[in-house]
Structures are given as structure tokens and as C-alpha cells.
Image 1: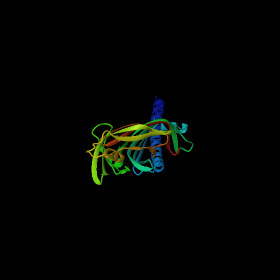
Image 2: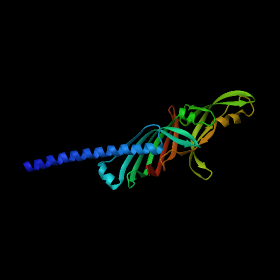
Image 3: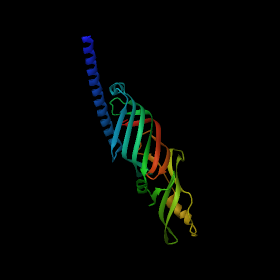
Length: 238
């Protein structure tokens, strides 16, 4: 009985040591992966990584990770050649196949969410318009100054923001903003002039992990919320 008790004690101690080593290893890997993502995406904000599954070392040796979650702050995407800041981006990568030197990998599928604040949308505007919440989901208030018949007019319109296919033979989606209606104020041609400032399309064609695509969006007081998804999505250095 004493021998069995010793065996059990040794097994418990070894198990605790192995669990401790495993937790140290996953923490180290999360830090290194966060650094790789930070450098690859050129982030101005922070990066955190959470690797799921236990034990981690067994997954690492097989080059297969069950799930990796990343949370990014300050992602600079590109919209029609202009930078557009994604304030937050949270993504979950499933069934990640690590590359040979563990510098990155490819997820069989991934999904996530991103937030663009109204301030960042306004900063990326090419027309000088100010964007804010339109009072309901998928609604945007767009305020712009226009010149009509020598007079400077400031108009605010409620617009619908939607996700549309890029078209013209191009892949991907575009973010489209269209005014629901434009008050004419009795001035001929004012609607056309106002819409030049308030109606626009933006294509987020760079800055997201390769393979991650826009699938839906909505808006609220915080800004525009993007839903993301994709398959064969690159993670870090792949």
C-alpha cells in the first residue's frame, strides 16, 4: 500500500509539473503569435491571443491547433486607397494548421466582428462629410456643406448603410451609403449636389487577415459593426 501511495504522489507531482510546463508553453506561444500579428498587420494598437485546447504541447507537436482567438485594437484597413481605422477586431480561428517553423498558420474557417467608430468613418471621408448614428440600425446621419448657386448650404440627411457585392467583375463586398431622401429646399439641382457629398461606396480591400471577408453589417451609437467570415484564413506569418 505504501508503494502505491508513493506512485500516486509521484504521478500527481509529475502531472502538476507537466501541466505547469504546458501552461507556460501556451503563454509563450500566445505572446510570440501576438507579436507576429502586430508586426504583420502594422497595428497602432494592441494585440492579444488566446489559444484554446489542452494540452497545448500535443497540439503544437502535431501542428494542429483547435482554436485561436485574437483581439486587435487599431487596425488600419484600406478603403479605396485611403486608410480606414478599424477600432476593434475580434476573430476566432478554427482548426489551425501551423506552418513548419511555427511562425503562422492557416485556419480551416474563421469568423469575427469589427467596429468602425463614427469618428474614424468621418476621418476617412473623401467628401468632407460628417457621419454619425442615424437613430436606427443600418441608418447613418450624414452632414455635409455644399455650394448651390453661390450659396453655402449645410444639409443633414438620414442614409441607409448596406453591404453590396462589388460588381464589375470584382470579388468581395463594398460598404454603400445612400441618402433615403434629400430635401430640395426649392432650389433646382440641390438634391444632385447634396448626394455628391452624402452618397458613397467604400471597399475594404486591405488590412484584414487574408481570407477573412465582410459578410454583414449594422450600426448603432458606437459606430458601424462588421461581421466577418471566411475559410482558409491566414494567421500571422503564413
